[in-house]
Image (cartoon, rainbow, N blue to C red):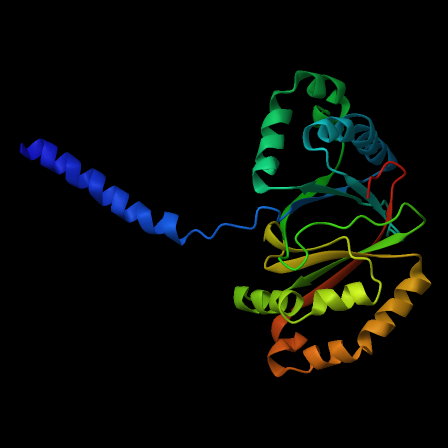
Length: 262
């Protein structure tokens, strides 16, 4: 064998050998595990909010519905401190659909033309002041969303931030393996989703959304949760103490817009 061919073959073999562990170590997700994109739009005035809401109601949601056939949730804060933020929840049946939608919208000329007021707003008069985006992966114990009944309701979006990756995984273990998700369901919280944030702000964290008739109903449900024997049993385990696993809890009360599909 010529030396050049030998070197070339050795290099190819080395690269292939180095790549093999990456392929074999990859652990595939369950086919029906959903992903959720959570967007939070921050405004300085009503005009920005109107421009953004008009875009989502009239342009974005109809376009996405044709591509994904998924319900898009759009929410406002129940009790905003000043101008409300707008929360947009986009479900995806698979990660590939998240990337595919972005590619499709990038090339959709009609979408860009109809949505120009939002998509191409001038720098001196933007459609929003700030956008925060996270991508979430559903818990294995609730791999797909549950849509609440179309009736008067409020939503609580909760996020548990952990100081370390290990603590975050341990907190998720409580939900997935120790029965916490089942407690929420049994007590009638009507959860929409439970998910881990795989990229976005304040990682590591887990995020979930539950539903109530009103604030009195919320208070009653959380009181029942706190006194539930099964919850007391789980939370009494020393390794699951919040002081070890949770560094910050954020709770945001939301109401759906008239055009929200969730």
